[in-house]
Length: 103
Image (cartoon, rainbow, N blue to C red):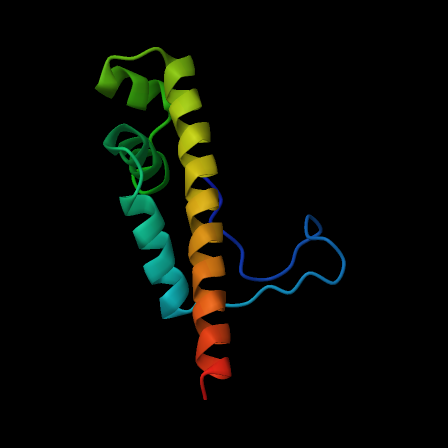
């Protein structure tokens, strides 16, 4: 199954005024850190789904789990990754604010 690649340019699905920027190396590091924090089962589902472009059904067969369980693991992994990225972003913003005030 071929999935569309992520777009770096705005499309009709983006909100008006939304800015799309190229990811920085810091963004890549944060994403890798967030993915590393996932439980192994969730991390495996994310990697197999996106890197290998496996279907939910193929991942379910690989893990010996029902397809719906794999879908739930995927949704859980995405939610956990989003929360971790938010936490990392807030921590970086606090560090920057502290660095500015200590000058």
